[in-house]
Image (cartoon, rainbow, N blue to C red; front, side):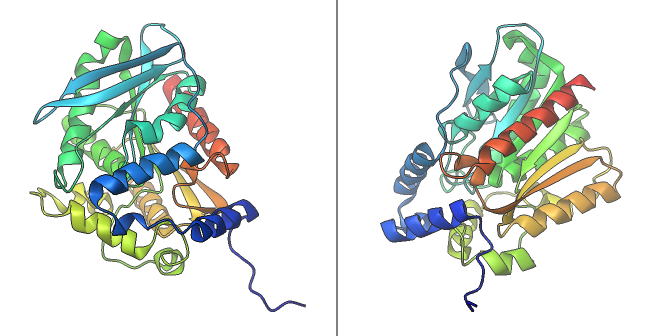
Length: 315
C-alpha cells in the first residue's frame, strides 16, 4: 500500500497543474501589469473553449462616471424584450476583460433564454478600487433605464461575475437594492467577499493552486488606494444588512482559497431571508470556468448557471 497522500484534485486538474509547473511560465504577479494582462488573455484563450457563434453580437458603449464603458452584447436571437445578464469578468480588479469571459457568456446567451452584456470596467492600478464598482453599477443603471433601446427587458435583469467580478456583482446587487432597481438574480462564481480572515480553504489551497497567496496579495496591492466610501463595497460580506437583496446563485470550486468565503456569503444571505442556490464542483480549482478545454466541469458549470438564469427569468 502506498503512503503517498491522495490528491484532492480531479485527475484533469492535477494534470493541468503539473503541466503549468513544467512549462515554467513566469507567475502573473511577477510580471509588469500590461504583460500580466496579455499573459492572462493568452492563457484563457488557450484553456477556454472557443466562444459559440451567435446571430447577435454587438459592441457598444455605456456612459460611465468618467467616460464611455466598452460593452459587448451576445444574444441567440433578435427578438425584442429579452431578459439580460450583466456579466462582470474576473481578474483581481487588475487583469481580465470582455474577451476573457466571452466563451462562457456565449454559452449563457445560447441557453439561458436571455441576452448577456459584459463590460470592460476600469482596472487597477491605473484606476484604484472602487472605480470598477462605479462602472459596474453605472452599467446596471443604464440597463435599467435604457436597456430597452437595445431590445432588453428592464424588468428582467440579472447581475453576475466570477472571482473579483463576483465581488463586483455582489456589491452591485446591494447597491441595486438600495437604489430600488429590482434584479431577478445575482450569480456569483467563487467571489472574494472579505479581506483579512484566513479561512481553512485559504490556508489549504493558497499554496497549491494557480490562485496563490502571492497573486492575491499582488491584486490587492494594485487595487487598493481609491476613495472607498463603504467597507462593504469591497467586502460585501460586511454589509450592514443583506435583507431584500436579489436571490443568489453561488458556484464554487472545492479546491479554491475562496471556497469558504462563498459558503460564508451564502449563509449570510440565508440568514437575511434571501433565497440561495449553492453549488460546489468537487476537485476543481479557482478559475475552472475558464478551463473548459481541459476541465470538463467547466461546461457543467456554464449549463448550471444558464439553467438558473432561465428559471429566474421565468418567475
